[in-house]
Length: 207
Image (cartoon, rainbow, N blue to C red; front, side, top):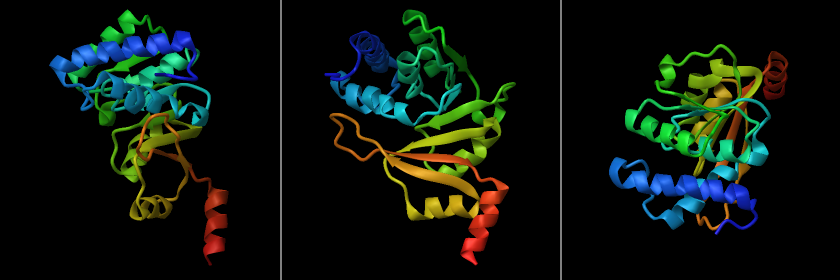
């Protein structure tokens, strides 16, 4: 079911999956109802981003049921993960997950992104929920460390979406993900601040 995943980690991930499947019957936390499908569409999909994450604290915006933040926190217990979610029933679920799985490296912020403030910036902000990349970037850029990255998990990207990022001076690259047992396209859109020297160079190239 989870080939290539450390057995201890796989056990924790499946315990999380079981909690999600049980709560999902009442609270409608995920559109994926089949526990078997949750493995590829939620767990393995979340783990697929690990090679592309910079080291340091991570913020998962609009985490919902804890995706991808909970699997990342389980796989990397040395990383501090903040889950940002405004829906109270989802927050109750997240707190129960942290309690039952004894997650010491996870903090839950029950608020909307627009109202969220931090004392220390994040190395990476990630999200599965935003439909438009520039809006995501504009909402989280102030939460990033100077060399931080904003990562949008996408089914696909569109030319107009990428053009809007270029027009706004946002540096980005795309990365295709390979998710075991998932017959669907998955991509990362990795965004960072364009430095003044990069902007000048790109302007010279354009002219």
